[in-house]
Amino acid sequence: MKTSTKIWIVIFIISLVLSLLLGGAVSQGIILENGISFNFSVLGYVGLIFVIINFISSNILFFRFLTAQPFSRLLFFITVPVTAFSAIICFYLINLNTIQNPQVEYVRQVLNVSPTNNNNYLWLAIIVIAYLLILFISFKFACKPIKKVEDAVRRLSNGRVPGEIQIGGSKQFSEIENGLNKINVNYKEKENLIKKTNLEYEKYIPKQFLKFLGKSSILELELGNQVQREVTTMFVDIHHSTQTSTTLSLEENFNYINSYLNVVSPIIRKFNGFVDKYLGDGILAVFAKPENALECSVSIVKAVDIKNKSMKNLPNLEVGISINTGEVVFGIVGEEERKSPTIISDAVNFASKMNDFNKYFGSKIIFSKRTLNSLKIDYPLSYRYVGTLSFEDDKEFVSLFESLDHHERKKRDKMENDKTQFEQAVRFFNLGKCHQAKEIFQTILKNTRGDKVAYMYYNRCEQDVCGEAPLRI
Image (cartoon, rainbow, N blue to C red; front, top):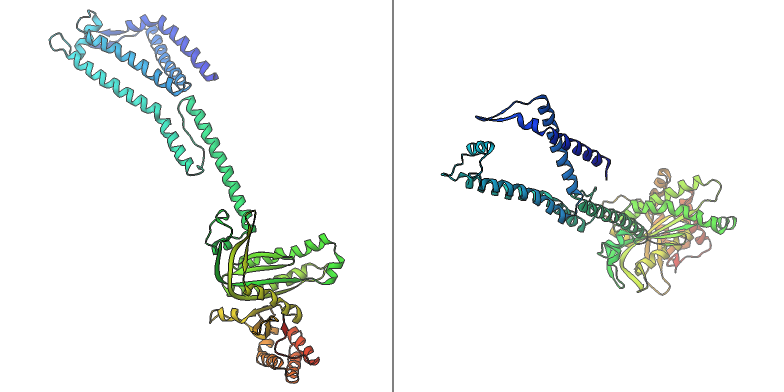
């Protein structure tokens, strides 16, 4: 029992005893002659105060008693006092004309009741209506928490409810309130866990991959799901020198490469692409638009250069990026116990092979003719034709182009000025005209130092190794 309740019980008992002791003085102060008048003595006023205190304390205790009861008892204890009080009034109204008492005579005068008019039955009807109205209000008040429980359950059925659920009412409803709030807390914890899990899933299966498949959740993925789309794939290959591999332990080498991947991956997301898979020290990324892939590649090269400058005690890493556009199949492969999302296409395979050109010629960013043709007509791009590439059993050659946008402005301007000569030299090389190609590449190298692609072509011309394609995979 609460301390406040104990205090109210003491107040009720004291006020009740004093009200009974001083009740005579209070009643003597009420005069029923030609109306109601009051003439309280000092004891009458004191007794009246204790009567009021007793009335207040009894109602407070009764209300607290009700709130401590189960709902079924609550309705009973609300009904009984009202019914008993109404029954007593009804009894006196029925027998009002037969009771001989000065106070009753005054009541008859006030209510205008006499043996001839039978107005007491009219008042009886009014009391019955008032009784029913009081019961209606009492039941509505008592059942109000049920409506709140219904509303809380409805909201909980749709998910977590913001804030705490408040029911009120009797002790039984307080327990229901606590139970619903525990459920709400569990909802919140599970909701946070689901959000956290979904965020972790997105690290393994990107949202964009699900979007290509027309799915909104990893739970919707099924073995064999597939869809064909034209996209631009980008292979990012991080070339680390032999010195790096031999001077670092396996763990250090792993962390070293991973530090570069941590630089590259956020840039891919920034340009609306996603990482399909990590290939050791390389990345396969997918873009819906070729423009995004080219812009991303330039940012990656620049970011890796900045990273190299910050790693003063370690060898620099070189990055080679190849970009190809074509039809690919997004799908879920594997078996029921082990599923894996992937993209499959000759366009993807060719993009990976394009990196061999980067490794051999020392270029940073190359892209295919299909990618060039997929760009917007007004897309600003500094580039040049650098040769062709084909598979061993494929007679079709694919034209390759090098992006120049990652170079410093001065060097890029020189390379753009030499673009026509450079491309003519490459065509001479492909036709087997080593002498003509060599002379042009020699002139280009005098104008632009550090042009690695021109230098490699020049060396091959020196070796008299010219042919239809610089590389055949």
